[in-house]
Length: 75
Image 1: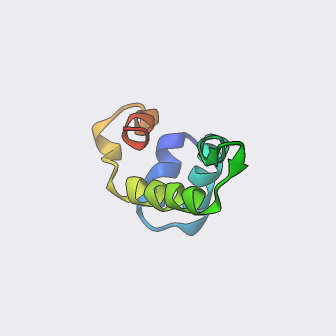
Image 2 (image 1 turned 60 degrees about the vertical axis):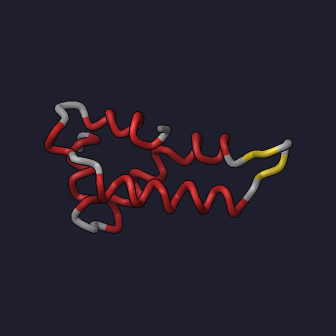
């Protein structure tokens, strides 16, 4: 399944699709949740929460390439 299709399902509150998108971005979120050499669980949870908000708000139909979501996430 293409990323755009997974993202569309996630926008329709498909729990499995939401988890799949989160898992795709997990390494990046973990990387940025390390502060002063220590993993900050609260910061990581904020990233996950923000990711879920972005999934629900991202206008999938507006973009041919769903990967444009990267720009929204790290803005």
